[in-house]
Image (cartoon, rainbow, N blue to C red; front, side, top):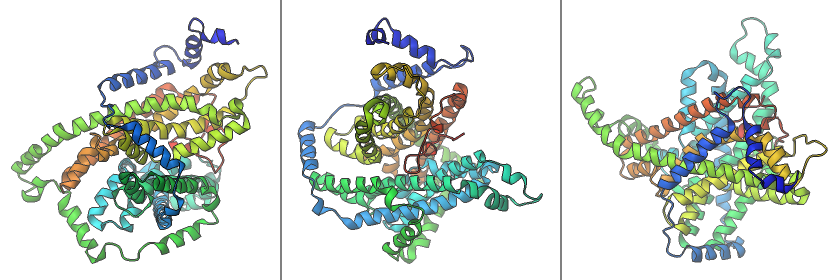
Length: 540
C-alpha cells in the first residue's frame, strides 16, 4: 500500500474503524466509540484543568537542570542511602509477598479478605507512610510497613488470579477431604512457584521505586537526598544519584535472583537500625487507633445517643462538601487527562522497542530509553517538573503520562515483534497503521483500562505536592493533626479507586477483550521483563 493511499480521503480512519469494531452488533460499545469517549472526556477535562506554567523562568531552570545532568557529580553519591533503599524494598516486598500469598489462598471464597485486600492496595504508600510516622516515627518500621501493607493487597489479588488460572489436574486426584491448605501446598504450589517468583522479583523493582519516593517524607532513602538536592538546585549531585538508581533498577536481574534472595533478605535486616520507635510505640498504636482516628464527635459523646450521631453528621458535611467533592473532582480531571495522554504517548513509543520497526540497534536504544522512563517514579518526576514549571496540574499530568507510557509502550513493542506478519506485509507507516496497531488495539485498550485505576490512585497523592486533589486535603489534615479527617479522606480515595476499578471491569467485559484472537498476555515475556500480571493482565 502506498503512502498516498494512507493519507487520502480518510482511508486510515475507515480502515482502523472497521478493524477495531466488535463483531457482536452495534448495541455493544466498539473500540472506536470507547476510544472517542475517553478522548472527548480528556479534552473536556483539559478545558477546565489548571495547567498553567507559573514559574518565572522555566527555560533558565531547565537549562540548569540539563547542565547538571551533563556534569553529574558521582563522587557526591550517598552510597548508604542506596543500601537502605534496597533494604527497605527487599524486606517490605518479602513481607507483602508472604502475607499476600496467605490471603490469596482464601481470596476467592472470602468477601472480607477481598475487601481488606482492596483497601490495602488502594491506599498509596505515601499515605501509609504519613499515617505510620505518627505511630512509629521516621524509622524502619514506617518504611517497611508502608511498602508491605499495600503490596500485601496487590499480591493477594494477583496471586489469587494465578491460582484461579492454574491447571487443576493435580487437585482432582487428591483424596476426598484434603484440606484447602494441603491441596494448595502439594497440588498447586509446585506448578505456580515459578510464576510467583517471577512476579515477586518484578514487584521488587516496583518496591525500589516506592522506597525512593518514601524519602520525600523523611525516610533515609535515595529520595531523601534527591529532594534536598533538587530544592537547593544541586542538579549535578541529583543527576548522579538518580543515575545510580537507574543502574540499580537496570541490573536488578543480576543481583536479585532466586538464589540471592535469602542473602539479600538477611543483609537487609542487618543493615537496618535495631531499635525502632522506642518503648512508646505500643502506646502510640493504642492512642492512634483508640483516639486519634476516631471522629471527634464520637470521642466525647455517647454512641447510643441521637445527639452524638447528629453531631457526627454536622462534622462530616463540611468535609464532604469542602474537601471530598472538590478533591475527587480534581483527581478525576487530572487522571483522565493523564490516562489519555499516556495512551497516545505509548502508541507513539512502542515501535522504538520493536525490531520490526527499528532493527536490532534501534530496539536496544529504545529499550534503554523506556527502561529509564518506567523506572522514574511518577511522584519524583512531578516534583522535579514542579520546580521547573511551578504549581499546577501540568507537571503531574506529564509525570503520569510519561511513566505509564513507558510501561505500556515497552510491553506493546515486545509483543509487536511476536505477531505473525504475512510475507507481503508492508513496512514503515503502513505496517504500523494497517497491520500492527489494529491487531494490538484491543489489548492496548485493556492496558489503558487496567492502568486507569492505578493512575487515579497516583493522582490522589500529587496533592502532597500542592495539586488540589484528594491528597492535598489529606496532607493538610495530617499537618493539622486532624487524623480522623485524614482517614475519612483516605477512605474517599479508596472508594474512588474501587469505583473506577468497577467501571473498568465492566468496560473490559462489554468489549469482550479477553476473547480477542491477539492477546498481549500470550506474547513472550521473560522473567527479566515486566510480566503481564504486573499491570493486572490475566494470563490465559
